Amino acid sequence: MVNGGNKYYKTVNINTTSPNESETSILIIYTGGTIGMDADIKSKSLVPFDFEKIIDKVPELKRFDFQLTVISLEPLIDSSNIKASHWATLASLVEEFYDEFDSFVILHGTDTMAYSASALSYMLDNLQKPVIFTGAQLPIGMPRTDARENLIASLEMAAARDENGEMLIKEVCICFNNVLLRGNRSKKVQSVNFTAFKSYNYPALAEAGIHIEYNEVLLWKNQSQELMQAFTEMDENVVIIKLFPGMTHHYLEAILSIPGLKGVVLETYGSGNTPTDDWLIDSLKRAIDRGIVIVNISQCTGGYVLQGRYETSVHLEEIGVIGGGDMTTEAAITKLMYLFGRYKDRNKVKILMKKSLRGEISHDHIQ
Image 1 (cartoon, rainbow, N blue to C red):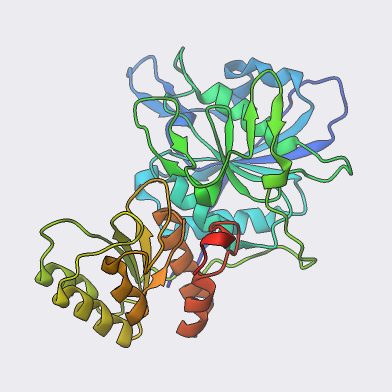
Image 2: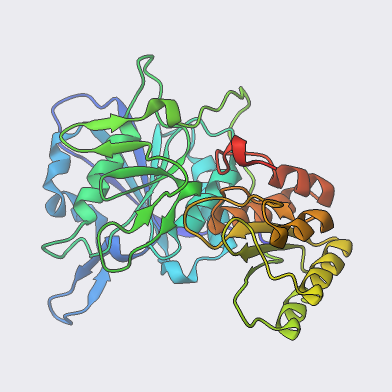
């Protein structure tokens, strides 16, 4: 189990020099990653960018009337090193400054952004404000960088209000390449193009062209009147098992025999199918009988799991594997971490894995 601890961070207040009185205050949390890197002239290497000079790099910010404050985590984190403890830190920061700011923009490396956005979507209970992740494929100091465009779009979307003057977005999202996606529906799909993220099973929440067009009917609507609360305990005793032709009994048993293991995301073929070998079904059943929660997620980037549709998934349904519907692997594994961190009752975890907590699974795909 991990909890968020105290972290050192540097705070920078940014004056956008707009003549208008600001209506929206936005906290930018820089965790690390490509978006905040700049070229050092002397060493000719990439070094962390000084956000006190953000107006020089992104002069377009002068046209906005946002109140911007930047918190830079120290030390900065390469997104490949992200752990549950870092998610706890981010959730705690949002909770700490929740009443002081209208919106939050988190600058994050792209490699694990979908995991982090999924995790925070669960950890920030009763969220009523935007928490938007963004990053870049090229550093902010490079001529052809996508960092400026991603940052500007994220800030504009984070500042959007509805007809009643309330924040329009009330969930955790990823904004990238002028598209706003639900965080727990997103996957990184490109490492060399600017179209780094896709949401195959849920439409985009907004698209920025000449104007920003919001699909308001798709936005998450939290009906709770409870105060926002960050739940920072995440249980890391979970694994992802991806099926592949030729996988052996010893391989599967070795993973399922990990001491303290509580949950498994089983990546299966197509709509949730597995080989029908007796040893595979027997191994999964024994694990379930020991109390391990197993969730069936498709290896396909689009589509969903429908256990029992074919003979090759009937046995999974019979032994108690949970059909994961159209959840992404990122959403499923972080959901297991969150639920096991928050609840001791494994039956409750099983029940909640089948429910949509933050829009991570479509109601018509819940089994």
